[in-house]
Image (cartoon, rainbow over all chains, first blue to last red):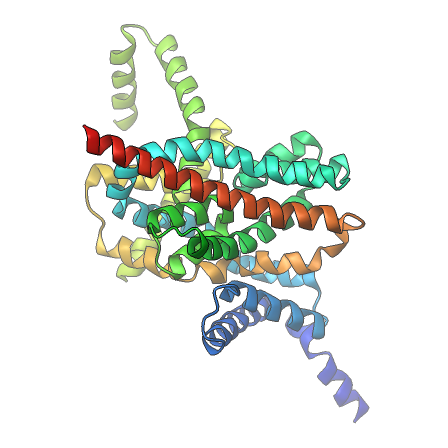
Length: 260
Length: 121
């Protein structure tokens, strides 16, 4: 009898060796979070992603599932973020008329707002006596995660702290965009979508799609392009220099030969 | 079938983005590069196929599910902040509040300015 109970208690530990356990757990928390969100009357200050994440964390802690093992299983979910990011290009293309109409505000706001976001965080943390390592982890929080990790490493910060910072920033940015949209007030949905994407990263973008607001993936797109352009320009110069003939023609020949 | 075909296109663009990232050492994820390539391709083609539209819609509608495992990580990294709780949380909360405020105000005023100058033209 005691053996039976022991085996019963060991269920979570044994099942969690399969990725299906992490997938089932994440899916259940996702649906439970959405159900609770609807139950609470869709409060602005509590996005479903927070509800789901809190429940998931509680279940992992209560069942004493190894967190690292959970993340290994959940890899099968997070790996889909790659094609999902590519998929963001499609709504962006469908909103191209918004981008054409707003290109000037976007070009002016993006670098300024992104820089100020980092300045605010570092100055506040510095004033409250944070160590240089913490400051270095907070500094790049305004840019997207893959770029930010590179900057943090250069500055000598901690990557897990940076990732945590990005996630907390994402959640609170969603709340503040909702709140400030009412207080200021800002009614233009294009501005709200842009602010969600710029300040809230992945979480903000997901939130924008939940409430069907356009332009959230745009800051990510613009940052990516900004980082790529110097490299593409270098490549262009390299190709021009290494091929004979007038530069423009040489490049056309080069691309044509690649196609063939 | 049609949705799977769309998914294949997304995966191919992702792989293309990853390949570009590795070859040209671009510090942006393959997904973001794939997204940029995708918008430019669609601009050249001028339309979105049904397969691609349904696959992208399906993935975007579960975006919250896809980022959840990452979000849960916040609750399991408390030790990273040891001793600096006040500074870190103040920087994140107040800093994000200020940056959201800045973005909204900046964007609002520039939109208004550019609308006014267009009106004068």
